[in-house]
Image 1 (cartoon, helix red, strand yellow):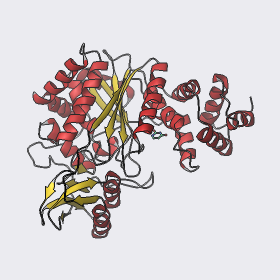
Image 2: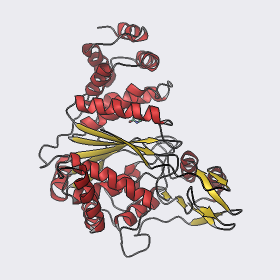
Image 3: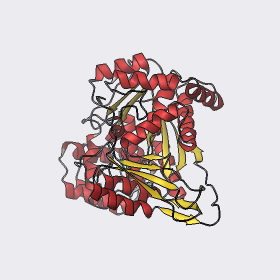
Image 4: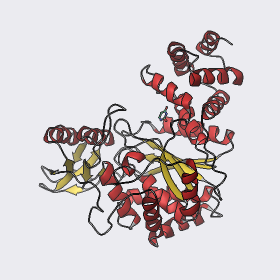
Length: 434
Ligand code: URA
């Protein structure tokens, strides 16, 4: 088979056969196809798209291009979740313990953050001593014993995606729905869970800026998952404003613990409960989604979710002190308030601008090899719909460097828009696609 023919066929808008896709993916994974041919093919896909069958074949070929995680030694229906990425999105930290407390095993592989969105592994790494690398038998044993473990994605998982993503990143071919869907789902399929709940974010701080594109992405991912024999549902959720009030790694861990104590912000609690309920339902611990919602709520209200969180943190070597106000998480040296200039409603708080301000403080990475500062970030005291008086604190910036603080402060101010009238509230959970 010749790669030039595969490129030509896609350039001319024809469908590739399964054999051609498998040849291509093998060549990407083992390095026999050069970058320039992969780039040309990705650009052809960008313009011509892929049929549902081609997209499923691509995702499956990529999923099996490297190590595939075997979870059959763990009893029960194993479930996973994936968020397409947002600002302040710490739902995974709340959801894993809630689902585990309901008796559904979660063997979670997560990634580090890049750009204005945070990564789950970075958040866990702000806990002193927390180990995100574990040998596979120990990982399985922990999930069997306490129903929850979170580790960083194995280096051998989906090598074809690793190379293809790096090429797409520098050839303006990230923004292609079949390529995004197969990239995400190949990693979920290789991670071994039988049930997958997708949180597809929509809005200024999300990858998908419009409802239509987000819904299309969700449907393609569901189709891929089902083609691979997995149970998949997707929630479309609003990412026009940050989720919760904390943005930045240690601050987000603190907010997740507060939420598990029943003292979290309402939006974070609402989305976490719904994601947990969908996972509990896929995990077959409830006979209806309403019963699953009850189980999620009772795991939160009874404190059993918090117990699961403590067990998981302890099992992975994490050291927290729950009697301290910040639970022993790292704290930044400088805290600076941003205050309101006049009485007005907060009309909009742009998630992308807030995420970029947090990144400027050092909470996120511009480049893969950047080192992040777990202590820095932003606490938001006023969100859209809130009425503020002159002098009220809008936000508190946590910084470790005065220069970074100043640039982040200017960036954060750009995120706010005020109005004399109360703005209309937009729903947090836009749609369930199942
Ligand atoms: N996230 C992924 O994992 N892959 C993409 O292509 C885009 C976002």
